Image (cartoon, rainbow, N blue to C red; front, side, top):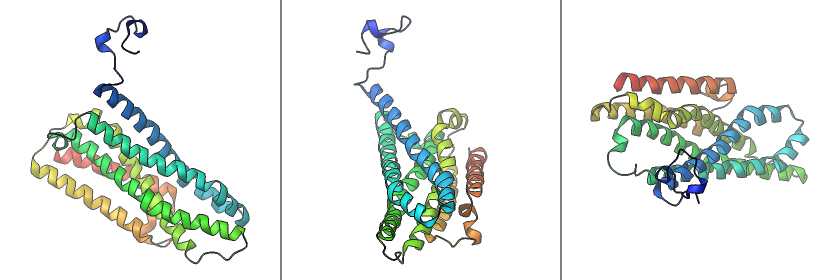
Amino acid sequence: MLGSGGFLPKDMSPEAAVEIFTQEGGVFLSRWAHYLAGVTWIGLLYYFNFVQVPTFAEFEAGTRTEAIRKLVPRALWWFRYGALLTVLSGFLILVFQDQTEGDYFKTTPGISISVGILLGLIMFANVWLVIWPNQKILIANAEGLAAGNEALPNAAAAARKAACASRTNALFSIPMLFFMGATSHFAGNYENGEGGQRAIYWALVVLIVVVFQAIALTAPAVGKPQAWHIDQHRNTIIAGFVLSAVLILLFEVLF
C-alpha cells in the first residue's frame, strides 16, 4: 500500500503520501486518465489531419477504398472514445478538486480553464455529432464500392462536412491545449477582474469561436475564402496559433 512505510522514499513521511482511495487520489487518477485519453484523442486528430488525409489523396481509388474499410473504422473507434474519456475524466478533475463550487470560475485561473473546456466541448461535439456520422457514410460507401455498387450520392458532401469539422478541431486544439496546460502557470499572473471585464472577455471569446464553428458546419466548398484555414493543414496550424495569441492578448488587455 502506498501509505505503508516500507514503500515510501526515505525522505517522505506517511502524511506526505498520496492515498489513492481519497479525494487527493481521485484528483491524481482523474488527471492521469485525462492525460492518457487526451493524448489518444489529439494524437489521432493530428494523424487524421496531417497524415491520413494527404496520404489518402495520393492513393489509387481501390487502395483508398480498402484503407477506408479496414483502417478508418479502427482509428475512429479510438478517436471518439478517446474524446469521450477525455471529457469525462476532465469533469472528474473538477469534481475531485471542488472547483464546481464557489467562485472559482470567476477567477482568472477559472476563466482560463473554462476557455479550454469550451473549446474541448465543441471539439467533442464535432467528433460525435459531425465527424462520426459523416464518416459512417464514407465507410458505408467504401463497403458498397468494394461490393461492386455505385457510390453513395451523399458521400462527397459527407466527406467535406467531416473534413471541415476535423480541421476546425485541429485549429481549436492549439489554444485548447494552451489554456488546459498553462492555466496554473499563466492565469495566476493576472488579477481576477471585475464582472464587466469578464463579460467582455467571454463575449469576444464566444463570438470568435462561434464564427469558426459556423464556418465548419456550413462546410464551404474547397477554395472559398472562408475555407482558407480548412483547405491546407499549414493554414490550420497558422490559424490555431493566431487564435491562441488573440485569446492570450485579450487576457493581457482585460485582466
